[in-house]
Amino acid sequence: MIASLPEALQQGQNQMVLAYLAGKSAHSDIAIPLWQAVKELPGVRLYCSDRDHFGYVVVYVGTLAFGFAEGMSGVTLRLPPMFAEQLISQGAEHRATLGPEWTFLRLFGNCGFESQLAKLAGLAHQCAEPPSNHSFEADGSAAAQLKR
Image (cartoon, rainbow, N blue to C red; front, side, top):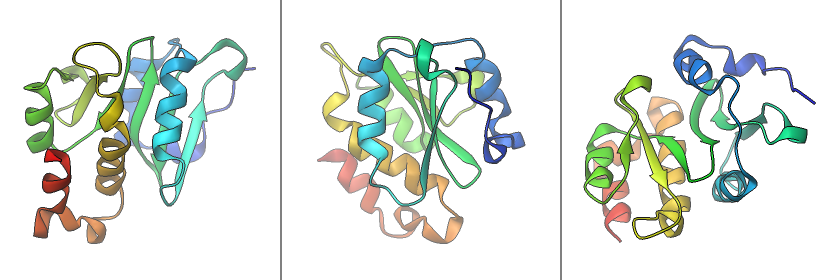
């Protein structure tokens, strides 16, 4: 059954992502790890476009999407460009058509990011929260965690 898009996601900052995802699907091998990585984070909501037919999955907090699963090989997260550059040097891919902050992470294989997904999804979540919660800007703690 096709699910109605939540009003919270119908905000301007999500439009490019939603247009990109229109008509796409997500394999459960990709969607489940994304949900497991974010389900304990505060305020996280999940939207699946069509649960019966493996529709794409978007994770969001408030009115801002910070990650999605589509296809069969990985997830895409909204990350600060300074972190994205480091990840790209490790095999991630920039999703330039969506904006400078979107990075695709292949989950499996030689360059797979499966073991780092929870940490990276946590960073994306932190960045999606209101600016007062962006502690990584002041103390660099997120950068230190990314290097671990």
